[in-house]
Amino acid sequence: MKNPAVVFILAALMLISGAVHAERIKDLAGIAGVRQNQLLGYGLVVGLDGSGDQTTQTPFTVQSIISMMMQLGVALPPATSLQLKNVAAVMVTSSLPPFSQPGQLLDVTVSSMGNAKSLSGGTLLMTPLKGADNQIYAMAQGNVLVGGVGAAIAGSKAQINHLSVGRISAGATVERAIPTEVGHGDTIQLELNNADFSTASRVVNALNQRFGSDTAMALDGRVIQVRAPESPDARVAFIGNMENLDVNPAQMAAKVILNGRTGSIVMNQAVTLESCAVAHGNLSVVINTESSVSQPNALSGGKTVTTEKSDIEIKKEPGLVVLLKAGVSLAEVVKALNSIGATPQDLLSILQAMKAAGALRAELEII
Image 1 (cartoon, helix red, strand yellow):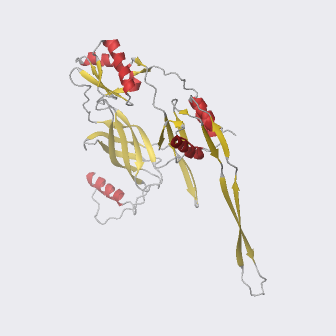
Image 2 (cartoon, rainbow, N blue to C red; image 1 turned 60 degrees about the vertical axis):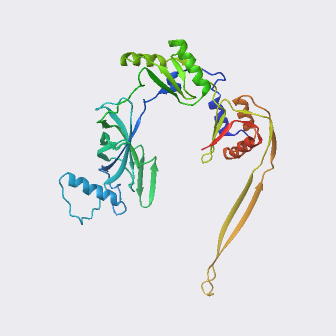
Image 3 (cartoon, rainbow, N blue to C red; image 1 turned 90 degrees about the vertical axis):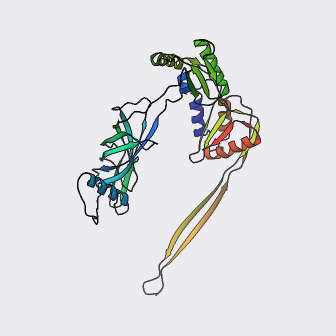
């Protein structure tokens, strides 16, 4: 019987052609210095319908409320004991895109850091978002949208998706711009997404053929130095033309990604298989326990006795020795693995054993 997980991998990856297609430099590399910057802030979400933090267990929520009220001119006695159910302490995260200017709007993610049951229907109060240098770059505020629903009554609970994380579209306003320098002097640097000497050499050749000799020079397997006009307007036009230039990247190294938690297996087109023999069998243990009650007569003076009877059954399927022939393409490798009839969890061990035996021509990466 065919393994559904392996069949899915085959169906998804058969769409990949064996030939390497040309890709734009924009898809292969980025410009040094043109990057996003992470922003982080701590704030309060109010207006929750009794699903906020339990303030007796989250003292930082109470401290934040008292501090905010003092800033608004409301003085609370030091010994005040607040029991609020409609407030939740949250962390607010976002990313500042390159070339962002004051007034630009950003999306933010709001995540509960206490024991709030849900952020649905809440409103994030004005929260400063800081960068790694502890400077404020944006201010966030708005209604939190949670992509889930939940209900609980009389000990029963039903929930769809996550309720303690929400999102605010265009919920932050940029207050400070980050200067972004595209290169220094008359040069810029291209940084390949994946370090590869062959791809770097091909990008250099393509740039020199398009814009003239000595335009590009590879510094290593990832960084390429490119001569560019010094005028900002001319440099932007040059980078636009450069990014749309097509290059045939080198074939990626053969790699198999194994996820031990979910049993997922993904491999790229370069994976090949040498001839080998694989034995596979399953061992299962089933334990059934039945309880019986012995009830004496009402006038006998005896006691009720509960006994348990357990049946243990061990099933061992015969191991099958399967000959896997050498495969020179991804389709043949998947077909060979599918013939074993193993589950995804079994394939994790089988692939590791194949690698140790030298039959799997690929790098194994376990995540």
